[in-house]
Image (cartoon, rainbow, N blue to C red; front, side, top):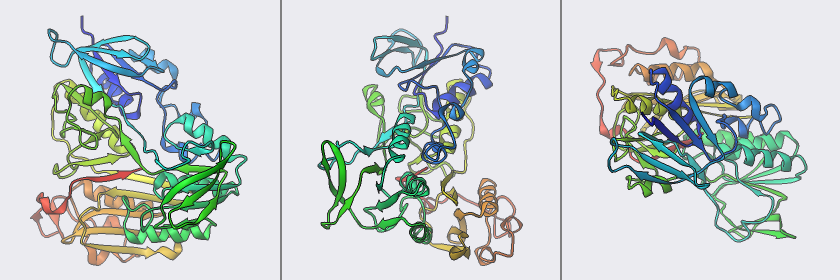
Length: 440
């Protein structure tokens, strides 16, 4: 009898692998194991609607409890896989996984969707009570409880998570300071124009934003944080600290299996690891550029987790096809809705559409007049037009894109052409660089 597929990691990618296997007609057993005690749930709302009290855990669940039994998916919660032994005599890719409780899970096919963990800040006082991270539901529940009685909130890290939490805390009337070590906000994800807009927008809403400021330590009393010390000698009062300085892909298990890892599990366009019988998907992976197929990028987003998981499921069933997808991301910070399509890495020009002072504008990024990406703030129509254009391998002429009176969708050239003159789009390695990481 087939032992079926073992999916390690109860993440969005893990659930999508299981669902896609069933949608593709796979009838063999599927076991989805996750270390959290909760069934798979949406993570993006944890720093937005959940902190605002507009959502609870049951509303975040991807599927009803009955779904798993009805779909023949054996969901194992609260178990962490600590070891995987390969079978020397079974089918390629088969083996047995062992959990920390000693449970054994045999499999014929293996998918790793182990995700990433919050990057810790190794400075004095980092273990004081009231210093929080936000990655999972339990983190968010603890943070929401603490926010209810906090007075001075310091957010360390000016990325998506940090600014979303800062926005939620400010909406509750808390005093909020954002400390960012880089020269601008969200530097890994957006261009300078958008970074500066968000600095000013959060300042207008009462958030104290400190750029080029590194944390040297935390001070406390009776085991609880009371302040944040900066490297320039500044001391900030704080009874609650949220640290959001990025994530680290979980590579312990793949490294034990001898898989190639480089800032994540290295996979190809078909989600195959260095052992082609094992697939991986989601935030734990490093993959070829999803549009060009060149280089290696790590993309932390819902869209990538879902798209890559669908590919991984097809690969497990031996169905390899052409895989090209347009990355997209979002970050809702109060009434500021940022939507991103494409990757702007390597751009040599940009077009600002609209006025940032109106809090409704877009920035389109180009390389040699070829459209690469968009950052859209409260302009969903612009975002959708660019996302569609990139999916069609089309472009939008930069000399026209800056006119807000012209709908971008009316400027999209025919698929496969540049500037609408029939010249074919070609992949060019100069347009893309390795090591790009973007998170949401």
